[in-house]
Length: 488
Image (cartoon, rainbow, N blue to C red; front, side, top):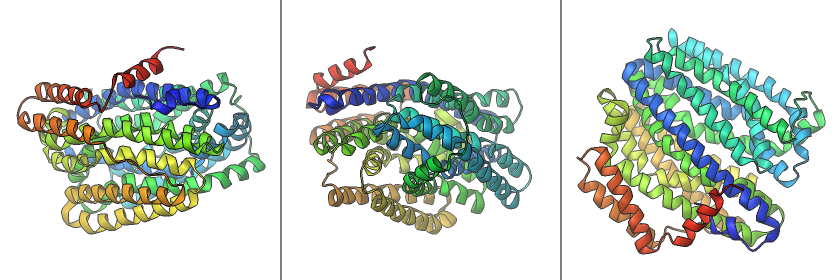
C-alpha cells in the first residue's frame, strides 16, 4: 500500500513525484506478482524434471551471472536514476554517451566469467558458465536504460521490463520439460536481458529519453563514472552478499547441496519483490526530496515505507519459519527436502531484507554515500567471514545461519548510520502489528501439518483480521491504495 506521505504529503511541489513513485510501486507489485508466479512455476518444473546435480549446475551459473551483472553495471543504474531524477533532460546525453562503454565493459566482465568457469569447473558446468556469461553485456546496458526510466519517474514502465525479463527466464523450463536438459534453461538466462533491453529501449525512445544514438562521450562518461563510483562499490558489495555463499558452496560442497541452498534462497526471493515494490521507488522519492532540502518530507516518506515493509515482511517470515517443510515439498518435490532447513533459517530474517531495502534507498538518496558504502563494506566482511567459517563445515545450513546473522548486523549498522548522519531513526514495528503477527504465528503453528491450501488462507485471514482489529492498518490506508491503483 502507498505511504501516507507519498500520496497526500503537504508539499504541492512534490505531488507529481510522489504519485509516480506510488503508482510505480503498485505496478511493480502487480507485474512482479505475475512474474514471480512464473518463476515459481519454473522452479517447480525444473526440480521435477531434473536431478539435484543438474539443478546444481543451473544454480552455479545463475549465481555467477547475478554476481557479474552487479559488477558490469558498475553503479551506473542508481547513478543515472539519481542524476535524471534531479534533471530529466540529462537522460539523452547520459544514455547516448555512455551505453556503448557499458556494452564494452559488459563484454570484458563476461569474458572474465567465462574464463573463470573454464578454469574452475569441469565438463558441462564450464560450458554452461560460458553460455550464461553472454547475458552480462546485455544486462549492463539494460540497467542503464532502466535507471533512466526510474529517474524520469516512469517506474511503472520499468516494472513491465523487469517482469518480462523474469518471464523469459522462466520460459526456459519448457524445453527442460520436453527433455532438452538443463542447458536450455541456461540459454534462456543468457537471452533474457537482451530481449528486455530491446523493449526498454523502445520505451525510452517513446518517452524522449533516448533516440538510439550510441557514441563514447568522454565528458559524459567521466561525469557518470564519478557519480557511479560509490554505487559501484555498493553494487559490488551487494553482489558479494547475494551470491558469494552459493559460489563458495559450489566450490567446496557437492552440486546437490549447492542446489538445496540456492533453491531455498530462490523461494525467499519469490516473495522479496514485495519489498522491492515499496522500497525500489523510494530511491527516486528520497533522492529528489533530499536534493531539494525537504528533510521532513523525506523523513515521513522513509518512516511510512518502513511501516509498510513491516506489514508485508513479518507474515512472510512467520510463514517461512512455520511452513518451511510443506512449502518445499509442494514447490520443489520430496527430492529437494533438504532445502527446508535453510529456508526456515533465512525465512526468519525475510522481514529484515525488506527493511534493508528501505535503509539502502536512504543511503543512496542522501549525501553521505561514501560513509554508507563503508558500512556496507563492513557488512560484507562480516558475511564473508561467517561464510568462510560455517560453509565448509556445515554446508547449506551454515550458509543460511551466516546470511541471517549478516542481515541482522546490516539492519542494525544502517540504523546507527542514519541516526548519526541525517538524524533519521528507523522505526520499530508497532505493538499492534506485532500482536497481529503473533496471532498469525499461532494459527499457522496449529495448522502446520494441514495442507497448504488450508493453512495459508487461514493464516492470511487471521493476519488481515488482526491488522484491522488492532488498528495496525485502517480504512484510510485502503483508501490511499485505491487512489493509487485508480487509472489516471
